[in-house]
Each structure stands twice: as structure tokens, then as C-alpha cells.
Image (cartoon, rainbow, N blue to C red; front, side, top):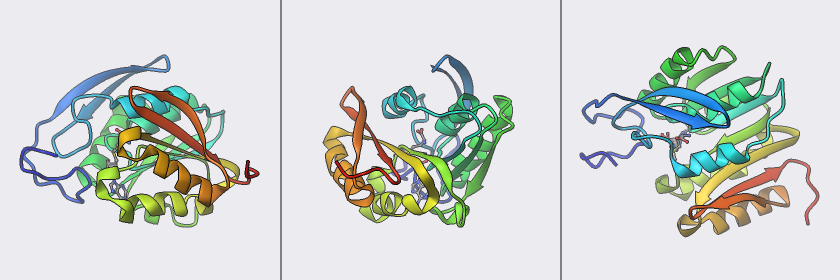
Amino acid sequence: MSRMGEHYSTRRPTSRRRPAEVSIEVRGLHLRLRTDAGVFSRGGLDRGSELLLEALEVGPCEDILDLGCGYGVLGIAAAKLSEGGHVVLTDVNERAAALARANLRTNAVANAEVRVGDLYEPVRGLAFDHIICNPPLRAGRAVVDPIVADAAAHLREGGRLWLVARTRQGADALRSRMARAFGDAEIVRRGSGYKVLRSTRGARPS
Ligand SMILES: C[S@@+](CC[C@H](N)C(=O)[O-])C[C@H]1O[C@@H](n2cnc3c(N)ncnc32)[C@H](O)[C@@H]1O
């Protein structure tokens, strides 16, 4: 929340701008990222996002969706980790999307694009090898449930949904919903009170 009480998931933040730049080291990458008031984790890399990046396994030439990209840290790192791949970063928050676009340029990422819109609407008809998301849990189940329920329709066979959540904010319930949608959901990393969860399209139920 900003000091005005505005949530970062809002479409057009009205909070007074407070531009900042953060330096992030993750997976051997050094990223310089612009942030601002009215976007998630303005002060630096969120611990959950960091854990998700530590766990993420992407190969070359893969198509990746960063759903709810904020200022773009997950998608930018994924684009650098998948040589020859392509990343679509999306967010409903126009200020976040503008920052993500600027951050692609600053970090010399040419294999990615930013689209603005609600949930999967900006990628209608597209299928990916990976969907990565630090979900906006505070936006409630009306937003988070479709991220899980509609993921398989946007994944190729064998494609993976990667989510991260705090245990005390419902990571286990989220895992159950992933398991219902995909037949299985693994905990692939845990730490600092977070769990990184992964489901695979076409995986056999355990
Ligand atoms: C927890 S933040 C994660 C941001 C970024 N991926 C990171 O790791 O720093 C969740 C993001 O989801 C976005 N969001 C919320 N509701 C959304 C929706 N309906 N469609 C798309 N993005 C949404 C928020 O604006 C926010 O940027």
C-alpha cells in the first residue's frame, strides 16, 4: 500500500510519484531496475520473487509469461536466462507496465515485451512453456483463482506454472488449488516463510 492507502494492483495509480532505482543481484545477473510509488516492492527485490528466481528452471528458446510483472524483475531475469527465448510481461497496473518497459531497455533485453491488461486477457490465444507469477494475494481469490484455473489453457503440454506465496498467506491452500487444476503441485523451494510451487501440464497425479 502507498501512504494514500492505494493498492499496487490498481489499474492507474494516483499516488505521488517517488521514482527510485534498485540494483539486484540474482542468478549471476546484475539488474538495474527503476521502481516507483504505487508498484509492488518499490524498495527492492521481494524475498518471494527472489526465491522463485532461485528455483526457476528455464531452457534456451522457451516462451515465458510473467503474469503480474510489476516493474519487471521476474520477466527480465527469465529473458536473460532463456537465450533465444521470448518473454511476455503483463500487468494490470499501467505504471508498473511502463516501468517494466523502461527496465527492458535499461537492461538491454530485446527478447521480451510488455502488455497491459487483466490476468490472461493480454495473451489470449497464446501458449507458453512457463508461466511465472508472484500472485497478488491481497487482491483476493477473485484474482488469484483464475491465475491457477486458467493457466493450463496457456501452457503447452509439459509447460509449467511457477507460483510463490508466503506460508502464512495461504501457500498451502494455493498448492491445493494448483493440485486440483493440474493433478499435482510440488514445493520446489522453501525459505524465509515462503514456498515456491510448481505444476506441470500433463503431469500424472501422484
Ligand atoms: C505480488 S506483485 C509481483 C510483482 C512482480 N512480479 C515482482 O515479483 O516483483 C503482483 C502483481 O500483480 C499485478 N496484478 C494484480 N492484479 C492483476 C490482474 N488482475 N491482472 C494482471 N496483473 C495483476 C499487480 O499490479 C502486481 O504488480
